[in-house]
Image (cartoon, rainbow, N blue to C red; front, side, top):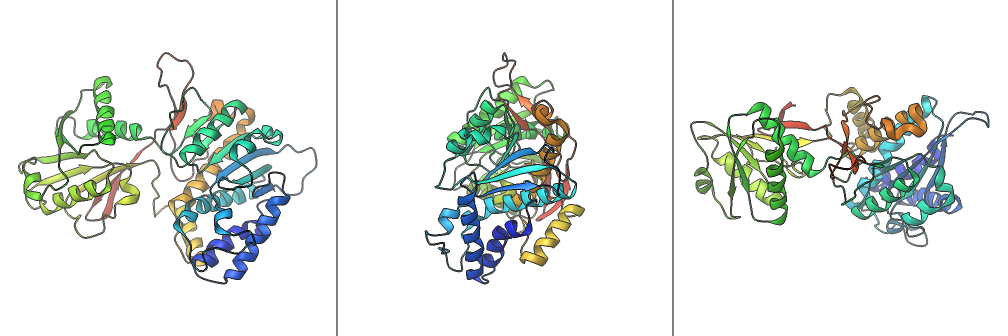
Length: 425
């Protein structure tokens, strides 16, 4: 059977009942059953589930592994009692929501007749390490790995996938982890360098002759951002942008910022810093000056999750940021997911739910079509359901015939004015 209701409800019951402060004892009972089941399973971790209707014994199954941080050992003590009473710590949410999205996709695949054996691993379990799991004889038949990972997890799982010669889909971590010569690694959440390339190309298309000011502060990450833009400028096949770099102090005020703006033109600004307070201060100062200066601000991908532009103090300027995952509230599937969560969970489905859903569905469908040759077709654009993917090989060593990894190069540019999304490019 698939991720049948009596299995998946263990995790969902925990999320629903604990988040909404309902029936803690029932949540504990569900998770105790889950923990007992995990110790009885071959993996000693969470679940070993088979997706299929009743079929004959000769049917071939595709074996898939999903790693996500469920923190079962942290959530429950040795007796199976929930540690946090009526609270639900934030650190439990991302991995749980990623699994919820994956489970939705697996349920859909089951209805479509998929023959899958899916093993779900709690990457924060103390029972068995990820290294041990990857080295188990039984893991050798795995054909696809999907993961919500930490930097440490990334390197371990990518190395295991390389030795097994199977794709590993890193769904959340926007970094290559200094991994090279590993075509098994696929990064869905685009790296910072790719975002810089995207910003540069977007500005080349839309403001090719404008003078563009890059506002930054002192810092190692800020220096890395500058090096990315400098490299892109040096290697671009088009006419380079006219970039001017300005270092700002933390205590800058609106009058000081106005010295770098021109009231007679549209001011194109890049805020080249990942520090949230620096970004907020810049946007708020630009808002104070918006009566005299027309300003378009391009920010970092972190703005998608850290900046609430509906708050007072952000009105006036045009604010742009890039993201590889744009959740269109008018998309019918997104509406369906949000309605389900609202009705059943009294909450909004997060972006991690959607990411788990679309990554699982897309790559499992490709696995069904291409089987052992999935790696050679990892960039196929079939079966995209919410976001488009543009998965391309990355060659850090230009002389090497082997990609260092694959990365999603598709970026959406979100434009916000007065707190509202007015365009998506």
